[in-house]
Amino acid sequence: MDIQNIKTEARNRWNTGNFLEKDLSIPKSTYDLPWIPYEDYMEAQLVDTTGGLLGRIIVRFPPEASEDNDLHIHPISDRVITVISGSGQFVCKRTKEKGLSKYELVPGTRVWMPRGVLHTFIAGTEGLLVESFHNPFVPFEHPKCLTYKKRRNYEF
Image 1: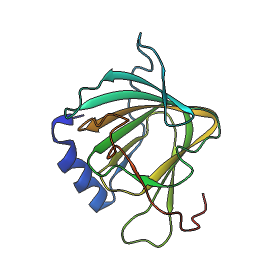
Image 2 (image 1 turned 120 degrees about the vertical axis):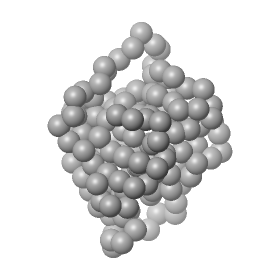
Image 3 (image 1 turned 180 degrees about the vertical axis):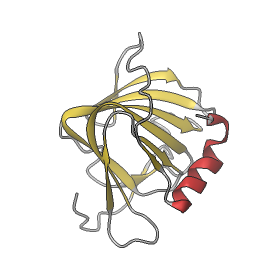
């Protein structure tokens, strides 16, 4: 994966509808790093996270959990997320479609997501473990790390 041009690649893939890849090799699942709390119920390993540069984290979702109660966006960071283990769904709002779109996630699935995409992830019964590249990495406590949108009676 050429991660040098994530911003351009993610936007191009999103706009052409080619933002989901399947059957890729699965990245290394864990590192000798501590798990830290992420959001209210997830955990993350911060593999390479210098603010303002390309970042890499591992995120662990508990079984049958939604990433957030509400959909959100990352206003200043593009993402490339690869499923390491578990299963779930990527739920997003596509510009030209009404309502939400859902995409199944299994090991080896990669999602190219440009900044500003309204989305969430929902873990399956065995949870979900993902590798996430952030371009640029925005520290979790930064006010523009993520922004919640008002709920519009979307159903997951």
